[in-house]
Amino acid sequence: MDRSGAAFRRGRLRLAHLVRLAPVLGFLTGVPAGAAPLAPTPVPDLAGATLQPVAYGALPGWSADDQAAAFATFLASCRALAKAPAEVGPASRSRLQPALRQACAAARRLGTATPTPALARLFFEANFRPFAITPTASPRGFLTGYYEPEVEGSLIPSADYAVPVYARPPDLISDAPGSNKGPAYRMQNGARVPYWNRAEIEDGALAGRGLEICWLKDPVDLFFMQIQGSARVRLPDGRVIRLNYDGHNGQPYVPVGRLLIERGIVPRNEMSMDRIRAFMEADPAAGKALRRESPSFVFFKAVPLKDGEGALGAQGIGLTPGRSIAVDRALHTYGTPVFISARLPIASPAPETPFQRLMIAQDTGSAIVGPARADLFFGAGAEAGRIAGRIRDPGDFFLLLPRFEPREAAP
Image 1 (cartoon, one colour):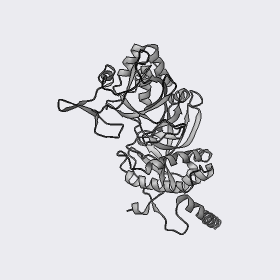
Image 2 (image 1 turned 135 degrees about the horizontal axis):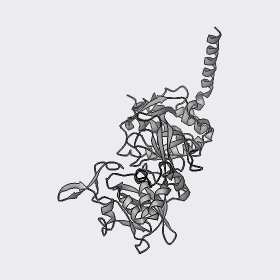
Image 3 (image 1 turned 30 degrees about the horizontal axis):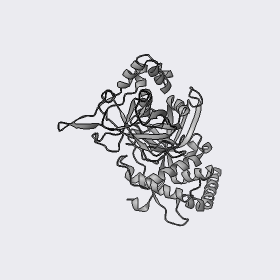
Protein backbone atom coordinates (compact mmCIF):
# COMPACT_ATOMS: atom_id res chain seq x y z
CA MET A 1 0.00 0.00 0.00
CA ASP A 2 2.76 2.41 0.94
CA ARG A 3 4.80 1.51 -2.16
CA SER A 4 1.78 1.90 -4.38
CA GLY A 5 1.01 5.29 -2.87
CA ALA A 6 4.58 6.47 -3.20
CA ALA A 7 4.68 5.39 -6.84
CA PHE A 8 1.40 7.22 -7.48
CA ARG A 9 2.74 10.40 -5.88
CA ARG A 10 6.00 10.18 -7.89
CA GLY A 11 3.94 9.72 -11.06
CA ARG A 12 1.88 12.82 -10.28
CA LEU A 13 5.02 14.82 -9.59
CA ARG A 14 6.59 13.74 -12.91
CA LEU A 15 3.36 14.61 -14.73
CA ALA A 16 3.21 18.03 -13.09
CA HIS A 17 6.88 18.61 -13.99
CA LEU A 18 6.23 17.74 -17.63
CA VAL A 19 3.18 20.02 -17.73
CA ARG A 20 5.31 22.91 -16.44
CA LEU A 21 8.04 22.11 -18.98
CA ALA A 22 5.68 21.72 -21.96
CA PRO A 23 6.18 25.29 -23.30
CA VAL A 24 9.97 24.94 -22.94
CA LEU A 25 10.00 21.52 -24.62
CA GLY A 26 7.81 22.88 -27.41
CA PHE A 27 10.29 25.69 -27.99
CA LEU A 28 13.30 23.34 -27.89
CA THR A 29 11.78 20.79 -30.27
CA GLY A 30 9.85 23.14 -32.52
CA VAL A 31 6.53 21.53 -31.59
CA PRO A 32 4.11 24.05 -30.03
CA ALA A 33 2.14 22.94 -26.99
CA GLY A 34 -1.09 21.22 -28.04
CA ALA A 35 0.16 20.46 -31.57
CA ALA A 36 0.29 16.94 -32.96
CA PRO A 37 3.60 15.30 -32.05
CA LEU A 38 6.27 14.64 -34.63
CA ALA A 39 6.80 11.07 -35.77
CA PRO A 40 9.38 9.21 -33.63
CA THR A 41 12.50 8.26 -35.55
CA PRO A 42 13.01 4.48 -35.81
CA VAL A 43 16.24 3.10 -34.38
CA PRO A 44 18.47 2.05 -37.29
CA ASP A 45 20.66 -1.01 -37.43
CA LEU A 46 24.38 -0.32 -36.97
CA ALA A 47 26.50 -2.93 -38.72
CA GLY A 48 29.04 -4.56 -36.43
CA ALA A 49 27.46 -3.32 -33.20
CA THR A 50 24.38 -3.32 -31.02
CA LEU A 51 22.60 -0.16 -29.88
CA GLN A 52 21.26 -0.13 -26.34
CA PRO A 53 19.08 2.79 -25.16
CA VAL A 54 20.40 4.51 -22.04
CA ALA A 55 19.38 7.47 -19.91
CA TYR A 56 21.34 10.72 -20.07
CA GLY A 57 22.17 10.18 -16.41
CA ALA A 58 24.11 7.07 -17.44
CA LEU A 59 26.49 9.09 -19.65
CA PRO A 60 29.66 9.63 -17.57
CA GLY A 61 30.26 13.35 -17.16
CA TRP A 62 27.25 14.43 -19.23
CA SER A 63 26.11 17.06 -16.74
CA ALA A 64 29.64 18.51 -16.44
CA ASP A 65 30.27 18.90 -20.18
CA ASP A 66 29.95 22.23 -22.02
CA GLN A 67 27.16 21.34 -24.44
CA ALA A 68 27.11 24.96 -25.64
CA ALA A 69 30.41 24.30 -27.46
CA ALA A 70 28.95 21.17 -29.00
CA PHE A 71 25.82 23.13 -29.98
CA ALA A 72 27.89 25.64 -31.97
CA THR A 73 29.63 22.77 -33.77
CA PHE A 74 26.29 21.08 -34.43
CA LEU A 75 24.95 24.30 -35.99
CA ALA A 76 27.91 24.30 -38.38
CA SER A 77 26.89 20.80 -39.50
CA CYS A 78 23.32 22.01 -39.88
CA ARG A 79 24.45 24.56 -42.46
CA ALA A 80 26.08 21.76 -44.45
CA LEU A 81 23.03 19.48 -44.07
CA ALA A 82 20.87 22.21 -45.60
CA LYS A 83 22.71 21.66 -48.88
CA ALA A 84 22.44 18.67 -51.20
CA PRO A 85 23.46 15.41 -49.47
CA ALA A 86 26.81 13.85 -50.29
CA GLU A 87 26.88 10.88 -52.64
CA VAL A 88 28.30 8.50 -50.03
CA GLY A 89 27.00 7.46 -46.65
CA PRO A 90 25.09 4.80 -44.71
CA ALA A 91 21.94 3.21 -46.05
CA SER A 92 20.02 4.62 -43.07
CA ARG A 93 20.77 8.18 -44.25
CA SER A 94 17.40 8.37 -46.00
CA ARG A 95 15.74 8.44 -42.56
CA LEU A 96 18.48 9.97 -40.42
CA GLN A 97 19.20 13.02 -42.55
CA PRO A 98 15.58 14.28 -42.49
CA ALA A 99 15.51 13.64 -38.74
CA LEU A 100 18.77 15.57 -38.28
CA ARG A 101 17.33 18.41 -40.35
CA GLN A 102 14.32 18.43 -38.01
CA ALA A 103 16.71 18.79 -35.06
CA CYS A 104 18.55 21.52 -36.97
CA ALA A 105 15.30 23.43 -37.41
CA ALA A 106 14.78 23.22 -33.66
CA ALA A 107 18.37 24.40 -33.08
CA ARG A 108 17.83 27.45 -35.25
CA ARG A 109 14.85 28.41 -33.09
CA LEU A 110 17.34 29.14 -30.33
CA GLY A 111 18.82 31.91 -32.47
CA THR A 112 22.30 32.50 -33.80
CA ALA A 113 23.80 33.34 -30.40
CA THR A 114 25.34 30.43 -28.52
CA PRO A 115 22.96 29.34 -25.73
CA THR A 116 24.10 28.74 -22.18
CA PRO A 117 25.49 25.26 -21.43
CA ALA A 118 22.33 24.45 -19.48
CA LEU A 119 20.02 25.46 -22.35
CA ALA A 120 22.18 23.63 -24.89
CA ARG A 121 22.04 20.52 -22.68
CA LEU A 122 18.24 20.76 -22.60
CA PHE A 123 18.21 21.13 -26.39
CA PHE A 124 20.13 17.90 -26.94
CA GLU A 125 18.10 16.02 -24.33
CA ALA A 126 14.82 17.19 -25.88
CA ASN A 127 15.81 16.38 -29.48
CA PHE A 128 18.04 13.29 -29.20
CA ARG A 129 17.97 9.86 -27.58
CA PRO A 130 21.28 8.35 -26.36
CA PHE A 131 22.26 4.80 -27.29
CA ALA A 132 25.33 2.94 -26.07
CA ILE A 133 27.31 1.44 -28.95
CA THR A 134 28.71 -2.00 -28.18
CA PRO A 135 30.95 -3.31 -30.97
CA THR A 136 30.50 -6.97 -31.84
CA ALA A 137 34.25 -7.57 -31.99
CA SER A 138 35.26 -5.84 -28.73
CA PRO A 139 33.68 -4.52 -25.53
CA ARG A 140 34.73 -0.90 -26.18
CA GLY A 141 35.44 1.45 -29.06
CA PHE A 142 38.81 2.80 -30.16
CA LEU A 143 40.08 6.38 -30.38
CA THR A 144 42.92 8.06 -32.20
CA GLY A 145 43.70 11.74 -32.70
CA TYR A 146 44.52 13.95 -35.65
CA TYR A 147 45.49 17.55 -36.26
CA GLU A 148 46.38 20.06 -38.97
CA PRO A 149 50.14 20.25 -39.48
CA GLU A 150 51.87 23.54 -40.28
CA VAL A 151 54.83 23.04 -42.60
CA GLU A 152 57.30 25.12 -44.57
CA GLY A 153 56.80 25.36 -48.32
CA SER A 154 57.14 27.46 -51.44
CA LEU A 155 55.18 28.08 -54.62
CA ILE A 156 58.45 27.84 -56.55
CA PRO A 157 60.74 24.77 -56.52
CA SER A 158 64.36 25.15 -55.46
CA ALA A 159 67.16 23.20 -53.83
CA ASP A 160 65.58 23.95 -50.43
CA TYR A 161 62.00 23.27 -51.55
CA ALA A 162 62.12 20.11 -53.65
CA VAL A 163 59.26 17.91 -52.38
CA PRO A 164 56.19 18.34 -54.63
CA VAL A 165 52.64 18.37 -53.28
CA TYR A 166 50.37 17.08 -56.04
CA ALA A 167 46.81 17.98 -56.94
CA ARG A 168 44.40 15.20 -57.89
CA PRO A 169 45.42 13.92 -61.35
CA PRO A 170 42.71 14.13 -64.03
CA ASP A 171 43.38 10.53 -65.13
CA LEU A 172 42.56 9.14 -61.67
CA ILE A 173 39.40 7.02 -61.96
CA SER A 174 37.48 6.01 -58.83
CA ASP A 175 34.59 3.58 -58.49
CA ALA A 176 33.32 5.60 -55.51
CA PRO A 177 33.58 9.33 -56.33
CA GLY A 178 33.58 11.42 -53.18
CA SER A 179 34.66 8.49 -51.01
CA ASN A 180 38.00 8.15 -49.28
CA LYS A 181 37.93 4.37 -49.61
CA GLY A 182 37.99 1.91 -52.48
CA PRO A 183 40.22 1.29 -55.48
CA ALA A 184 41.33 3.82 -58.07
CA TYR A 185 42.61 3.26 -61.58
CA ARG A 186 44.10 4.80 -64.69
CA MET A 187 43.65 3.77 -68.29
CA GLN A 188 46.52 2.15 -70.16
CA ASN A 189 46.08 0.78 -73.69
CA GLY A 190 42.33 0.80 -73.24
CA ALA A 191 42.39 -1.20 -70.01
CA ARG A 192 42.13 -0.22 -66.36
CA VAL A 193 45.32 -0.62 -64.34
CA PRO A 194 46.02 0.25 -60.68
CA TYR A 195 47.04 3.85 -60.20
CA TRP A 196 50.68 4.70 -59.52
CA ASN A 197 51.83 3.76 -56.03
CA ARG A 198 53.84 5.92 -53.62
CA ALA A 199 57.25 4.76 -54.84
CA GLU A 200 56.34 5.32 -58.49
CA ILE A 201 54.99 8.81 -57.77
CA GLU A 202 58.04 9.73 -55.70
CA ASP A 203 60.23 8.50 -58.60
CA GLY A 204 58.51 10.93 -60.99
CA ALA A 205 55.40 9.24 -62.43
CA LEU A 206 53.48 12.54 -62.16
CA ALA A 207 56.34 14.97 -62.70
CA GLY A 208 56.02 17.56 -65.47
CA ARG A 209 52.22 17.41 -65.70
CA GLY A 210 51.57 20.72 -63.95
CA LEU A 211 49.99 19.06 -60.91
CA GLU A 212 52.35 20.61 -58.36
CA ILE A 213 50.49 22.90 -55.93
CA CYS A 214 53.64 23.79 -54.00
CA TRP A 215 56.93 22.32 -52.85
CA LEU A 216 57.95 21.44 -49.28
CA LYS A 217 61.32 21.31 -47.55
CA ASP A 218 60.85 17.95 -45.87
CA PRO A 219 59.45 14.67 -47.29
CA VAL A 220 58.54 13.65 -43.74
CA ASP A 221 56.22 16.68 -43.57
CA LEU A 222 54.45 15.51 -46.74
CA PHE A 223 53.99 12.02 -45.30
CA PHE A 224 52.37 13.35 -42.13
CA MET A 225 50.25 15.77 -44.18
CA GLN A 226 48.91 12.77 -46.05
CA ILE A 227 48.12 10.92 -42.84
CA GLN A 228 46.28 13.94 -41.41
CA GLY A 229 44.54 14.90 -44.66
CA SER A 230 45.25 18.64 -44.49
CA ALA A 231 47.93 21.18 -43.64
CA ARG A 232 48.80 24.84 -43.42
CA VAL A 233 51.79 25.65 -45.62
CA ARG A 234 53.79 28.68 -44.52
CA LEU A 235 55.47 30.37 -47.48
CA PRO A 236 58.83 32.22 -47.34
CA ASP A 237 57.05 35.61 -47.45
CA GLY A 238 54.97 34.75 -44.37
CA ARG A 239 51.72 33.97 -46.18
CA VAL A 240 49.89 30.77 -45.26
CA ILE A 241 47.91 28.58 -47.64
CA ARG A 242 45.68 25.69 -46.63
CA LEU A 243 45.73 22.36 -48.43
CA ASN A 244 42.97 19.82 -48.01
CA TYR A 245 42.48 16.18 -48.95
CA ASP A 246 41.28 15.65 -52.53
CA GLY A 247 41.46 11.91 -53.02
CA HIS A 248 44.09 9.18 -53.01
CA ASN A 249 45.58 6.70 -55.42
CA GLY A 250 43.45 3.75 -54.29
CA GLN A 251 46.43 1.83 -52.98
CA PRO A 252 46.24 0.31 -49.46
CA TYR A 253 47.34 2.34 -46.46
CA VAL A 254 49.87 0.46 -44.32
CA PRO A 255 50.36 1.83 -40.75
CA VAL A 256 54.12 2.31 -40.58
CA GLY A 257 53.96 2.47 -36.78
CA ARG A 258 52.75 -1.11 -36.75
CA LEU A 259 55.76 -2.12 -38.87
CA LEU A 260 58.14 -0.48 -36.39
CA ILE A 261 56.47 -2.37 -33.53
CA GLU A 262 56.53 -5.71 -35.35
CA ARG A 263 60.25 -5.28 -36.09
CA GLY A 264 61.07 -4.47 -32.48
CA ILE A 265 62.28 -0.95 -33.32
CA VAL A 266 59.73 0.86 -31.13
CA PRO A 267 57.94 -0.75 -28.14
CA ARG A 268 54.17 -0.86 -28.53
CA ASN A 269 53.59 1.22 -25.39
CA GLU A 270 55.90 3.95 -26.70
CA MET A 271 54.48 4.20 -30.22
CA SER A 272 53.45 7.71 -31.30
CA MET A 273 53.72 10.02 -34.29
CA ASP A 274 56.74 11.63 -32.63
CA ARG A 275 58.53 8.27 -32.49
CA ILE A 276 57.79 7.61 -36.16
CA ARG A 277 59.09 11.05 -37.13
CA ALA A 278 62.20 10.61 -34.98
CA PHE A 279 62.98 7.31 -36.73
CA MET A 280 62.58 8.84 -40.20
CA GLU A 281 64.67 11.90 -39.39
CA ALA A 282 67.46 9.94 -37.71
CA ASP A 283 67.97 7.76 -40.80
CA PRO A 284 66.53 9.44 -43.94
CA ALA A 285 67.22 6.42 -46.17
CA ALA A 286 65.50 4.02 -43.77
CA GLY A 287 62.68 6.53 -43.35
CA LYS A 288 62.15 6.73 -47.11
CA ALA A 289 62.10 2.94 -47.38
CA LEU A 290 59.59 2.73 -44.52
CA ARG A 291 57.28 5.29 -46.14
CA ARG A 292 57.35 3.34 -49.40
CA GLU A 293 56.01 0.26 -47.61
CA SER A 294 52.69 2.13 -47.51
CA PRO A 295 51.78 2.47 -51.21
CA SER A 296 48.87 4.84 -50.52
CA PHE A 297 49.41 8.42 -51.75
CA VAL A 298 47.12 11.38 -50.99
CA PHE A 299 46.38 14.32 -53.30
CA PHE A 300 45.44 17.82 -52.17
CA LYS A 301 43.63 20.98 -53.21
CA ALA A 302 44.05 24.56 -52.04
CA VAL A 303 41.10 25.90 -50.03
CA PRO A 304 40.41 29.32 -48.47
CA LEU A 305 41.95 29.92 -45.07
CA LYS A 306 39.62 31.88 -42.82
CA ASP A 307 40.77 33.39 -39.55
CA GLY A 308 40.09 31.05 -36.65
CA GLU A 309 38.65 28.28 -38.82
CA GLY A 310 39.88 24.75 -38.31
CA ALA A 311 40.85 22.30 -41.03
CA LEU A 312 38.18 21.62 -43.62
CA GLY A 313 36.45 18.32 -42.88
CA ALA A 314 34.85 15.93 -45.35
CA GLN A 315 31.44 17.46 -44.56
CA GLY A 316 32.75 20.63 -46.20
CA ILE A 317 32.98 22.82 -43.10
CA GLY A 318 35.77 23.96 -40.78
CA LEU A 319 36.42 21.51 -37.96
CA THR A 320 36.21 22.53 -34.30
CA PRO A 321 39.18 21.50 -32.13
CA GLY A 322 37.98 19.28 -29.32
CA ARG A 323 34.46 18.90 -30.73
CA SER A 324 34.78 17.43 -34.26
CA ILE A 325 35.42 13.76 -34.98
CA ALA A 326 36.11 11.67 -38.05
CA VAL A 327 33.95 8.54 -38.31
CA ASP A 328 33.35 5.63 -40.65
CA ARG A 329 31.31 7.26 -43.40
CA ALA A 330 29.85 3.92 -44.45
CA LEU A 331 28.17 3.60 -41.03
CA HIS A 332 27.50 7.09 -39.70
CA THR A 333 25.83 10.27 -40.95
CA TYR A 334 27.61 13.62 -40.85
CA GLY A 335 26.14 15.94 -38.24
CA THR A 336 25.33 13.14 -35.78
CA PRO A 337 26.25 13.93 -32.14
CA VAL A 338 28.34 11.27 -30.39
CA PHE A 339 29.19 11.37 -26.68
CA ILE A 340 32.59 9.86 -25.90
CA SER A 341 33.93 8.79 -22.51
CA ALA A 342 37.58 7.80 -22.11
CA ARG A 343 40.84 8.44 -20.29
CA LEU A 344 43.39 9.82 -22.72
CA PRO A 345 47.07 10.91 -22.78
CA ILE A 346 46.31 14.61 -23.16
CA ALA A 347 47.98 16.30 -20.18
CA SER A 348 50.85 13.78 -20.26
CA PRO A 349 51.90 10.65 -22.16
CA ALA A 350 49.97 8.55 -19.63
CA PRO A 351 46.24 7.96 -20.37
CA GLU A 352 45.07 9.77 -17.25
CA THR A 353 43.09 12.79 -18.52
CA PRO A 354 39.29 12.28 -18.33
CA PHE A 355 37.69 12.93 -21.71
CA GLN A 356 33.88 13.04 -21.42
CA ARG A 357 32.58 15.19 -24.20
CA LEU A 358 29.83 15.57 -26.78
CA MET A 359 31.37 15.46 -30.25
CA ILE A 360 29.92 15.98 -33.74
CA ALA A 361 30.68 13.68 -36.71
CA GLN A 362 32.04 15.95 -39.44
CA ASP A 363 34.91 14.12 -41.11
CA THR A 364 36.16 10.72 -42.21
CA GLY A 365 39.42 8.95 -42.99
CA SER A 366 40.63 5.82 -44.75
CA ALA A 367 41.85 4.32 -41.46
CA ILE A 368 38.61 5.06 -39.59
CA VAL A 369 36.67 1.82 -39.91
CA GLY A 370 34.05 0.43 -37.55
CA PRO A 371 30.91 1.44 -35.63
CA ALA A 372 32.76 2.62 -32.48
CA ARG A 373 35.83 4.15 -34.06
CA ALA A 374 36.65 7.86 -34.06
CA ASP A 375 39.51 10.22 -34.80
CA LEU A 376 39.45 13.22 -32.43
CA PHE A 377 40.41 16.56 -34.02
CA PHE A 378 42.75 18.60 -31.80
CA GLY A 379 43.44 21.67 -33.95
CA ALA A 380 46.57 22.94 -35.70
CA GLY A 381 50.25 23.19 -34.85
CA ALA A 382 52.95 21.31 -33.00
CA GLU A 383 51.24 20.96 -29.60
CA ALA A 384 48.03 19.64 -31.18
CA GLY A 385 50.22 17.23 -33.14
CA ARG A 386 51.98 15.97 -30.01
CA ILE A 387 48.68 15.24 -28.29
CA ALA A 388 47.01 13.71 -31.34
CA GLY A 389 50.03 11.56 -32.13
CA ARG A 390 50.01 9.67 -28.84
CA ILE A 391 46.31 8.82 -28.67
CA ARG A 392 45.54 5.17 -29.34
CA ASP A 393 43.12 4.35 -26.56
CA PRO A 394 39.83 2.57 -25.85
CA GLY A 395 36.70 4.57 -25.19
CA ASP A 396 32.95 4.27 -24.69
CA PHE A 397 30.66 5.59 -27.43
CA PHE A 398 27.10 6.86 -27.07
CA LEU A 399 25.25 7.68 -30.27
CA LEU A 400 22.68 10.48 -30.01
CA LEU A 401 19.88 9.73 -32.47
CA PRO A 402 17.20 12.31 -33.32
CA ARG A 403 13.97 11.74 -31.44
CA PHE A 404 11.74 12.99 -34.24
CA GLU A 405 11.53 13.10 -38.00
CA PRO A 406 9.33 15.34 -40.15
CA ARG A 407 5.80 14.03 -40.47
CA GLU A 408 6.09 13.70 -44.24
CA ALA A 409 9.19 11.47 -43.81
CA ALA A 410 7.31 8.94 -41.69
CA PRO A 411 5.90 5.84 -43.44
